[in-house]
Length: 492
Image (cartoon, rainbow, N blue to C red; front, side, top):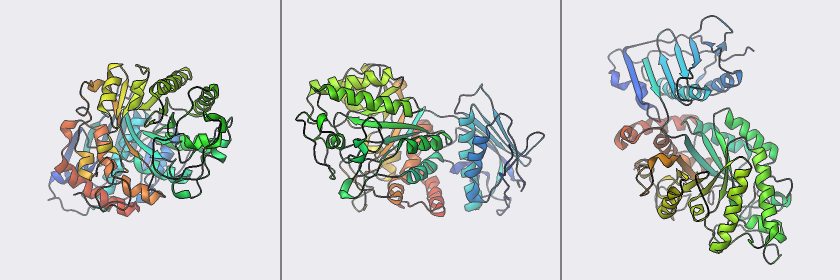
């Protein structure tokens, strides 16, 4: 297969007197573990020819699409020599990579195609810095690897619905920072957003509205498959969430039989939580859960299904455990790994499941004692829907205000006592959508906080410094503006 991927010109615009410490590797987020550079400016060739015998055409097409905004095109060569060389080395960890840039060529080696992709994100940032920020280019050799295997971003499409094109835009934006999981919150009191063919009223009724009463919407199963394909091309795994036994009013409004009294609830367009519950005493509840999780497991190519489990304030402890235990075992039986918010530690969670810490250290310690793995998502540091300050026009502040520094300057290993750091598989930055209506709102609350959270997920604590990072982030904010991303500007 042959296709165009073209060329670019890296013009020398800064004199040779520019100090080496200004080299553009210092502006990459997440920070690179190992770097070395030459002292002389170099000029890269205008024509790019890719030699990549072990790399799929699909990956090459994705890489090419990510640099068109820089006027770069690349052409593939089936054999012989080129000046863009992409390799695989199975002695490296799958997400690890090496990147070398010299006068003669750029060479990327990844432990897998994912490693190649992450090297490319580093290269993209170097190119932004050179072409958009007019920094000198020098020869570099660098290598890097991720700290955590799970580096997540969550988008709530239930309180406000966001369509396929909006979610694809989000995928594009987070991929630059080596995020590798997109958690979609697909059901809540305000809306059911994923088509379940065996229970069609979930979307036709339960998906009809959203917060504020506007028309809602939902993802068809074909939409969901398309999003998975698009995300996988950027090495992002979709993690779907069906939140039970609370946060279920959209389902209860869709099917009367799911209610203990047999009467359908009214559709809900507010933002209060904790008032809904599935009926633990009715057999139809378990038929419903079995059908929903079975269809979703069949649709989902990734290893995880998220079962929610949070804020079930009107569910008795006994009923909560009964329903959550059923969901945990059902998801495992379907060949998936269950994830739930930290409350699920109060059910029969074990080493086969994952607890997502958002509020309760006590619950997370309990999950750890049961040998469960843990994802760290503290509301006070990682909830992107928290307002930056009292003047922020979007978001909420029930977990406190979250300025950019606070979202960056914390350590996931020290938040929960009695949690072995080895049990932490990663961190996630959730974005709840009570106040968000469109892509511009999503961008404003996501940036510039997400890059720092991505750095926490990728790099080790000893490599992180707020004062150094702040200088780098200022450069990225300039790039956001060039890319047309709506961004909160203050770093104070």
